[in-house]
Length: 90
Image 1 (cartoon, rainbow, N blue to C red):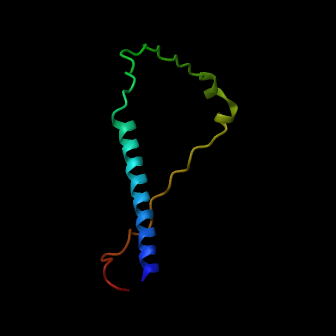
Image 2: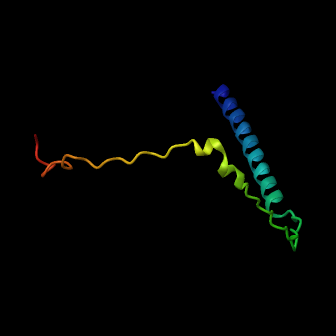
Image 3: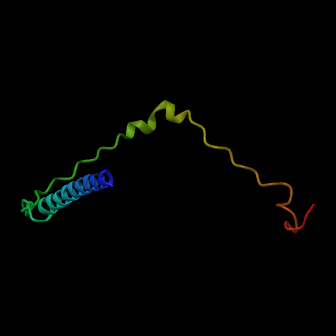
């Protein structure tokens, strides 16, 4: 009986220790997250000039590009498309 009582007290000590550590960590997170004065952001941003875009038109005259062939046209189907009633069994 005394051994069980001592084990229960030991378990309660561990639970109290874990509970106090959890409460302290939660309070630390709340304190650092909500009550910290954050630095104010910049009030105005400097305007950046847009980059100039230069198109290399000589790339269209390249021999490798001229050697490419376009896709062939797919001929339409000579047979009819599907069956009259596709929901009937064969």
